[in-house]
Image (cartoon, rainbow over all chains, first blue to last red; front, side, top):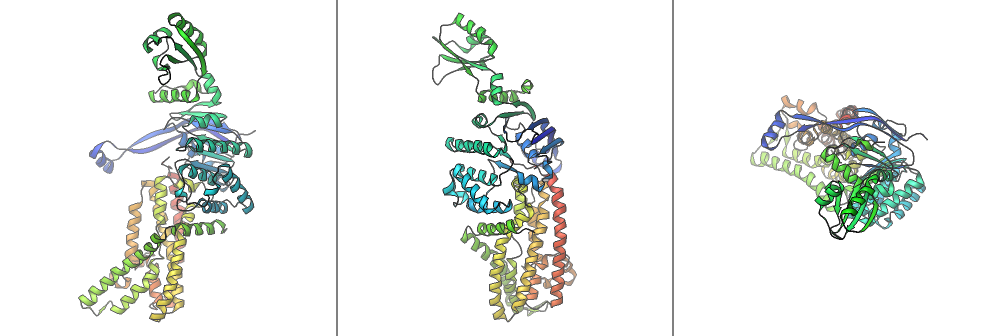
Length: 342
Length: 263
């Protein structure tokens, strides 16, 4: 199967003015502006297969949205090549625009003062969808997302969740082959987010659409994506299954003591850094979680059993959320986790 | 040319503009009455307070007639959809339009055109009444409205081209405001352009702005011959062709600089 998205050594930099603080900075900006160049993407390469559901994650400023903008043809790369459906995105050919869709959770695409049904009618005309097919799709999508009764309500009068669902309907009414979703569940309550996820899962499975999802919500990634790409400071540092990420990472060893030792003591006994030891404050302050590699579990347990009275223990899989959190923390502290890249 | 989406965009544009009926009504009345009131005060000061008999060969009655008839065309000359384009560029909202299989400049124009067409229809109804009372030719008013509508196209084309400066400077609001101020003055919606001294007529003759209000008003009042009107009509069409290329050039240049900021 040939890839539907091919990204080859893409880099992208942005030039912007640099303003120093205060009034002097304002004057300087007026008369002699200084510029700074920021590299948003650095030599990124990957391919994605048709019909897959892919997660694109990374801390703020990691380059996710820049990558989406290049893949949707909004901006060109500074160097490297991208091809979506065999087409160069920045040329934005008619065929390309007919075959893709971008949903940005933070940007409304529908007409604020009109009911969604009017906006959908316009989209039907834009994408030249035959009336019968349009009606079928609209009914299916509105039922799946449970918004049939809101189709005639002015968009501005809908709740955030209902609005997001309408945005999603508007984005996929033309049955795109590739869908880019940028934070689709942002601001949604648990129920609305769950419904949206269920819907995306069904749509991906039934229509074989290739979906690329960026989200800070690890639930979205874990529940939907068969593959995850992690960006860090403009570089792609992981490309693989989410499960592999957690398996390859660390285990969580949970130990409950008869008397709680201090973190300092635990560090000295096990050799595990204090920031990898977590006390379960909200439930039982005698329970601790140790994040560690699988091969160290036995030796750490032995040293704890030798020194303390342990009343319970267990091994848990590391949650994706925690693994990602660690990667983001490393990004902030400047540590590169390039060993993740497969 | 496929009319399907254009017709739907026009319908939605009208629904959108009239979503708030009172606001829509005030917009029409306000933008018609304010320039008219300025003119009326001006004529009163010159003729009643200043004691003038004629100005540039025009009597008080001539100028009052100009004011009433020019109101029919002032409303048609253009909306603010060029401002909307610059705002789309500045905020990055342009992205969503760029991904649709329609031209963003054309789409924005059609969406904003709907209320103008509605106003043109209202103006023609009012024009029929004015024609009856002032004994003007109804055909000339209809023909003049055609010229005013072509002026609407030119006005947008110039605005859409200027809006591309937002690709470079991120903000084109002032550029468009300056253009609008020049249009207010040089289109004839504030004063008839034949009040300009002979040495300064170049100021409006070399712009297309006089085709928006002054030209249609002069023809509707019977102060332009048919030949002058057709000359203006051909000029308007030439400006539209020029505007088409201006847009193609400025947008193909600007879009390469687009950063799609804001998300």
